[in-house]
Image (cartoon, rainbow over all chains, first blue to last red; front, side, top):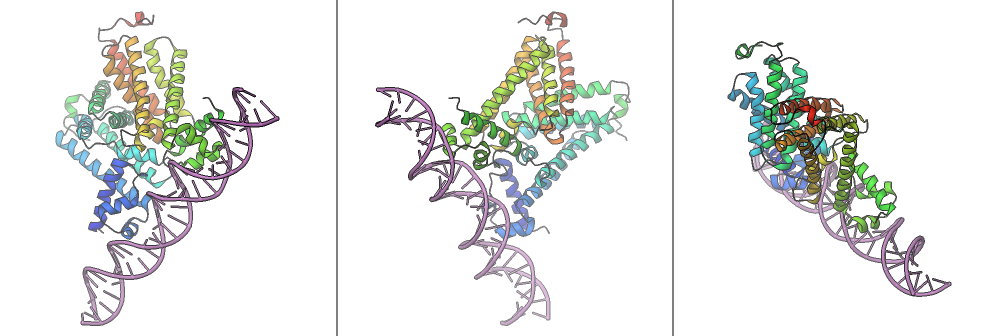
Amino acid sequence: MASPKREKLLEVARRLFETEGFHTTGIDRVLAEAGVAKMTLYNNFGSKDGLIVAVLEQSSHDMIARLEQTINDASSDPYEQILGVFDAFAMWFSDPEFCGCMFQAAVAEFQDPNSKPAIAARGHQIRVAAMFENLCTKAELPDPQTLSRMLGMLASGASCTARQIQTREPADHARQIAEILLERAGSTGFTAPRATIMNGSI
Amino acid sequence: MASPKREKLLEVARRLFETEGFHTTGIDRVLAEAGVAKMTLYNNFGSKDGLIVAVLEQSSHDMIARLEQTINDASSDPYEQILGVFDAFAMWFSDPEFCGCMFQAAVAEFQDPNSKPAIAARGHQIRVAAMFENLCTKAELPDPQTLSRMLGMLASGASCTARQIQTREPADHARQIAEILLERAGSTGFTAPRATIMNGSI
DNA sequence: GATACAATAGACGGATCGTTCTGTTTATCT
DNA sequence: AGATAAACAGAACGATCCGTCTATTGTATC
């Protein structure tokens, strides 16, 4: 199952798809750089689309796992953890090798909403949205659904803008806006005072 | 200059690039649906990339012109006009034929920042950002540069999210956030009271 | 050590890509 | 009207695409 060739294929494909796009990178290129045979690709993934889907799913898992670890390491307060997401984004955008969110690129390249890559890419956004909603609920913020959707939109906007201007600035701006939203949501009286939230329960 | 064949080509290419992507739509498809000869394309645009750039530039021009007309029709108050941008977005996203922002798709598909399509697509974002900054300055809001960048990021996030979920919701959320940002910026004491802004000068 | 089996490498195939080339038609100006 | 030049349609081109096929390698079992 965990064939080393398969792993190598995923690693190279991920890098090439990320830096050069899905349609522009031919499978021959992936195979050459990975040093594996064509049949290995088709035996493992069935098709180029299959490889793309596998790359998207693995990347999504990795990315969310790293993100959750980062925000958990930063704080145990869900309020702070929400802001920590944008700090993680700032770090991500600061990487000189940053070249945009892969999942945004995927939904842009595979416009047919029923195509498997498009579905896989949406899956990532759903997972990120779920993470935000979970954090909002933990923070006992009112209307966590609406708030989490706004936060998700901020995250998308930051990634999208960062792809163009290649600086961390969008993440910082998104964080500032998130801070304002959380501050307002937290002061509506529907939630417990900040001090009790620090206990972290629910 | 304003050859009808050239216009037809731009019109069809714009629709196909928008709905199916740049790399996935071959030029033969464009030519067939436009009913023009291949040489007409190459004489007018030089290459497929040339056609793409022309489509992006014309679309950007059209879109911004329509946007400015819409917000000017809605109000003469720059404060309201800023919010009007997001109302226009809501209308845009509500169109059943909406399939995402073409310029976001372009920067995603042409990852090389030096490629001509990528430059053309960034040009649109720069124009939108300039429009926001102009409105912020007119509204005499403090730090119009930062504020306009935040608004631009909101607009990008809304477009990006709307592409995925196909509802106007992101535009409404972005508008709500913009309202909060403007409210806060307007109440810092650095600007004239709202009443005087209604006069619309500067 | 021989055999069965799975994984590999690399050539091959049909299709489509963007571009160029070859005639033919259309329009303009003397 | 006749000549010249631009715009036209469509075939042809080489390159590249994804996917398949065949022949060869390595490995494990008896």
